Image (cartoon, rainbow, N blue to C red; front, side):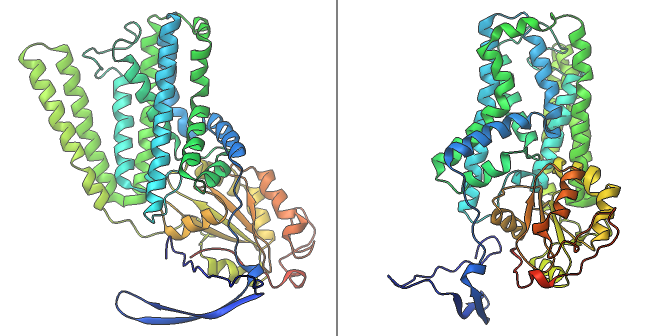
Length: 489
């Protein structure tokens, strides 16, 4: 038993043909000694098949392209502020300096992607349902990242500085500059994980079914794609000369770029409120106040001398440690009762999918998470739009939502069944039974409406209608009976 799915390994006698039907009795004894028996009978052709994997070369190409497109996803926007500041500092720098900083940033991205890949493999080997963005299922991680975004924003606002100075734009990066570029690359990866760009899903799904070396190669290709725009400066450092010369404008730019970081911290606070409720949010806000005090005390210390500097640094350290001491409390806060904001959405389960199909209704399954920005954008701009809602109503479509905010194993198993390692995932099941169609991770109204009108999804042409059709309904199931719903639970 793993990830909510029971897997049985059966040996077929050598030379014996594959049976048309597998039947028998499965007897299970739990830890309390309670024994249960289940009759099993299933046609071999009706059993779910594992998603076919991509060849390594294709997975690497998809990973490189997906990593490149990840730069355009909303998750990475806050870190673009740090990238813009770093690029501004490189204006007019020597070619060797430009190459070194580009290499440091690229190394930070690659190292973090490889660490994530290794962590995923280790967790899955231990039997946990870990996928892309799995760390956001832990409230303590979300809280720590929110505080990090706040700390970066306070630094950009000039409350405190690194290296003993306050203020931005005081020349090019100094001795700690390369470490800063490396850390910026690592941070870009961490904040990018709630998003999944096009091509990434197929690459990740194939990668985690490959041998460890191939898996890490795919994660490295993802990192190279994410770092590619900045790494291009290393290949063509002359491009830095096209940037504006350093000047007083850099200080204003630095302070303005703090607000995307504050916005990221606010978004993470909202995510934590979904995961840990008011109690968790109170701990997060308390830690934010402590970190704000620590930043102010450190800034005062950096502007002082003698005893004032020592006292300010001591106060900053004490406040930071007090904030970090709240993280175990975040991890221990019980999750609030699950609930769906949309009144027309039901919780996902494989049994509910099968029941709705048996009623002659098509089913749309939305696998999402509170921390997934792509999921939230798709829901608000596409799934809640008037044309899509009208099409859902016209076809009596069942709308089910699987919430992976807390990393539920059954939803993780469903993701892997369809070759995915993270959300969002959208499945459209035909009325009357049958395997679902897998929709893209970035939706448009046209994509959803076209999926509803495809002949292969409907038992008959009249069974699925769009809002403008004169007639329609969810009837006409006879032509497609007998299918089996796929799922895990």
